[in-house]
Length: 106
Image 1 (tube, rainbow, N blue to C red):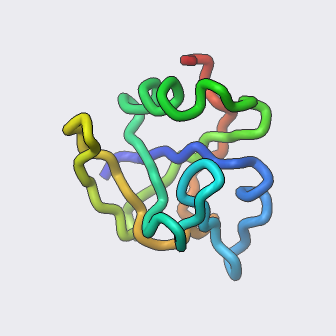
Image 2 (cartoon, rainbow, N blue to C red):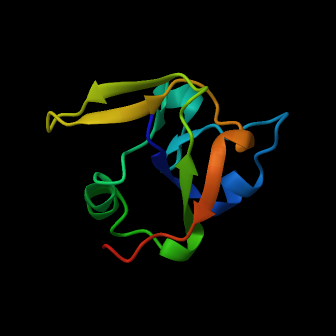
Image 3 (cartoon, rainbow, N blue to C red):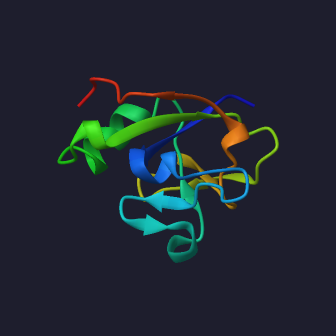
């Protein structure tokens, strides 16, 4: 399975630990509120950044590259018809391959 990506708030990600994994779904919404963590594939990333983060300060965000192999990831349709990966559990730091700055695609 290919890596998936999640745009994360830097502060929330920095607070994640093995005992208290990352549990934000999307901007200002938690996993508990939404029911899953929003993710995307690499080709979907420009659309996600443009559509949902164009007004965000990129210095407050980071991009998590995630290994979905041992996670409960389900590909589900968005209103556009595209299938987006959704993570149905908190994200353990050990499943993050690397943390990247946001790409300049916006």
